[in-house]
Image (cartoon, rainbow, N blue to C red):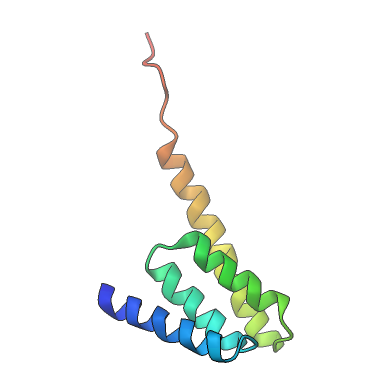
Length: 88
């Protein structure tokens, strides 16, 4: 539920404040933010993971999350671009 996501994000914020090099906390916070609809914040977290020295597996997971965000953003953009004038 919404409260669970907010609590998880707060926990990841705390973990990151204690250890800014904890890449898995950025990744998990990104997943929670993505689930919560915070696209820009999630993107920033996944990009942070990719800027760190991480395992190939974690880097691949972060890349997949970014691709999903980009695809969903592109699909959403198609639905929000309505014509400004009515034909005829």
